[in-house]
Length: 101
Image 1 (spheres, rainbow, N blue to C red):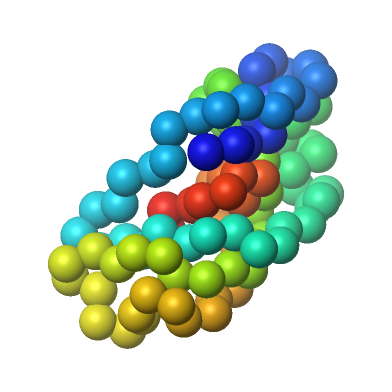
Image 2 (spheres, rainbow, N blue to C red):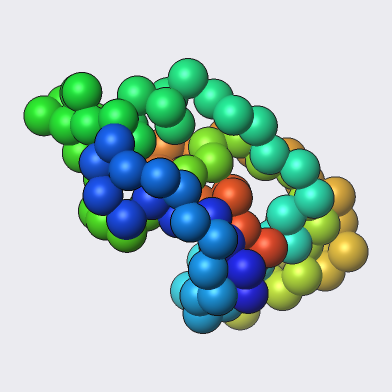
């Protein structure tokens, strides 16, 4: 899948091919339809607050997203493939075609 990633604090964002995330039994795979540029993404990417908001590099930004459920884990009962969803998370990852949540 395609994703926008940050390779180093304060660096340029790069557009790469990365593996589509695998989901756990209690997760869903979302095909991302929209995301936002959030202040939290910018702060994390700059590295100015890395002591309190660390990220594992390379990192895919994107905390807020909407999309469609592509796949569900075996323990998931609240969602089905094709469901429209939106959410915000703490880890990012929505600047990609797919996100496991």
